[in-house]
Image 1 (cartoon, rainbow, N blue to C red):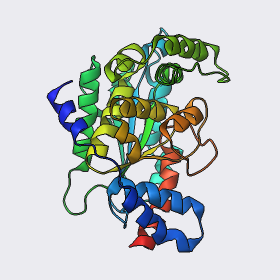
Image 2 (image 1 turned 30 degrees about the vertical axis):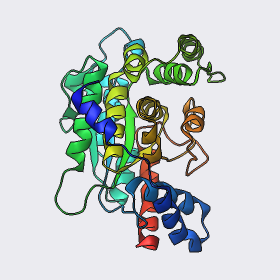
Image 3 (image 1 turned 180 degrees about the horizontal axis):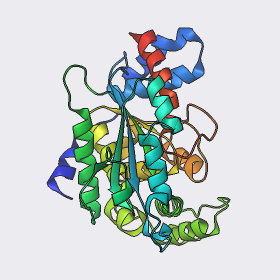
Image 4 (image 1 turned 45 degrees about the vertical axis):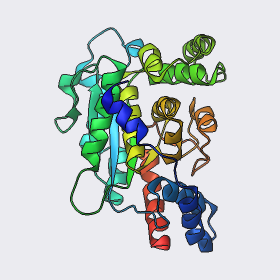
Length: 308
């Protein structure tokens, strides 16, 4: 373990059950079970009976997995690039939701197959070929997002883009739980998940080296750093869930800083069960690029208003 990662890991304490309960009590009069669940998670993560939500950010990390490489140059038509450009030009559902909630989007290229076609506003991370470097890049990203004058950052909503993430999420779920994921509707992902389940998890570094993509390690590092700074992290689809599995496998207490936007699809339902998370919405929403997390932000505002 590197010195940076060791310091961050040691700084992650348990989410505060007492503050979570106090925040829940503060919204109980609204008669909305969803708000009570959210208040509990936010209060516990932020270590306060009055959760904050004014300063928040949506962070979308893009990275393609080798297993999903089409084998030909697609240029501007590469699926990851197309999705990233839609976010950048404001036509994506995520961009529209971000505007209505007055929340900035930070788009990060952690290892896209066609980087020269990514939108110019994307933050490009240097090539990170080792799990340790990927985790450290995520830590640096979280610290950068948290910096600023005035009110401290209180919430990071995550999104992910990239081909091949389905197979990676199945493998990580199988390896960490020891149970082969079935019923996914993707024979290749199920086969990889079954193989991974028989090998055992090993360390977080082993998991990332064997199964993770570049965005998996960066997102996992971001989650660990956010937890160390008492920042709540909202998960969206299976790729963000896979990163959360790695982060919680490395530091179990990091799970206390996570909020599940929705039940999700593919591997996400079983991921949430393993992490002990109850989703805000018991449905699958979007494709995991962050729109699901953005939909929770108005509820964060309601919790802050009721407890403030």
